[in-house]
Image 1: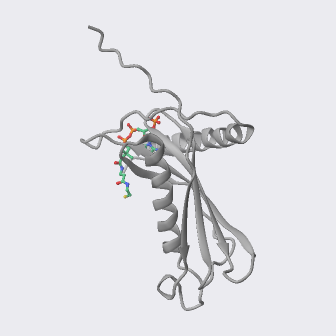
Image 2 (image 1 turned 120 degrees about the vertical axis):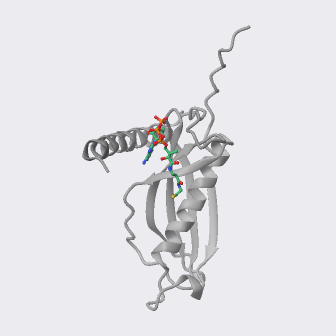
Length: 166
Ligand SMILES: CC(C)(COP(=O)(O)OP(=O)(O)OC[C@H]1O[C@@H](n2cnc3c(N)ncnc32)[C@H](O)[C@@H]1OP(=O)(O)O)[C@@H](O)C(=O)NCCC(=O)NCCS
């Protein structure tokens, strides 16, 4: 009997949207949202996108640099959009975009975006394979290319850290 496993079929990404209302407990004395709360929302939403894609446990391995370009204010409605853009053997990259909507107008601003890397782990905490991402549209191809650049940066960063030692 052969023990060879059938390779997983490519799967499409399923976008995830999380919506929250910015309350006084989420804001600093200037009336704008705590950066840490924005990061937590990004991490949680990105993790849901990763889990829904592979239907396996994942851990956050790293994030790329995140710049807060526009303040998010008390009372704003904040939306986080996440989707998987790239898969490796055991890791995947999720892009996440944050929008703030003023509650009583149709004004809506893109506040920040980020790229989160997740690694799927088995019961022993060891990396395990993820299914490949199905890439069809021109936008998905551009996203994939961006993910490939990020993977290469991560590879170089990890190699440099290994060379430096603890
Ligand atoms: C993430 C983790 C599972 C990687 O384990 P590891 O033994 O170092 O992984 P490996 O060197 O075998 O690499 C496995 C995969 O992880 C990726 N990876 C490892 N470290 C990474 C990092 N810092 N950023 C992005 N990807 C990373 C590798 O590129 C590789 O991807 P591939 O299989 O798609 O090519 C491990 O470091 C870990 O458990 N970290 C703690 C995660 C955690 O607790 N997160 C919550 C926040 S604290």
